[in-house]
Length: 259
Image (cartoon, one colour):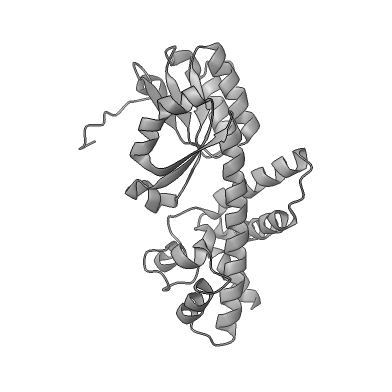
């Protein structure tokens, strides 16, 4: 607000007169109900002017993005999916990675806006391709976090210093983003959620949702993702044990109990 933003009392009010609309919602059902409406009520597309650019940065099913994009096109509205990676730190620093699904012309319209928020902008393909790229990335991230947590928990169970072990693995063939930027063991990285009681960051339930999207997509495309399926089961158990609201790196708690 201090920088000049104006508050609106509703989404309908917020889009009035806008040349571009950016949304980021938790799940497919929220995006669909927002834009297309539900229970007989008109969706937001009915309130957006023709020619407006809509950038949806939610992480949802590709089919949902395609459904909304089709309705938007019929209303004369440009709709692209542009999910992000980089976490809250990337958002604050303006270094997010955007995975865009849409036409070349739509990306050209969106590029100046995306460059204000991100450092990396990839054109994944047509509408829905951004979502597919995002769920592939997050499936890998979920798998890596489970594996990283498992390795650190094993080392700690054997009396190793988690900081020393993490540095050894980071500089060896086991090095990965979780070890370097988002270590799941408290105290290894000062600014990681693990060092802040697993508060903030990317929630376990959101990771579980994304792993579910990946498995649904794999089933629909007859793709084999056994490790993705195992990661989903592990995060589901972690969520059911009461950790759904904690950062997804808190998965190490469950693995430590078994070490």
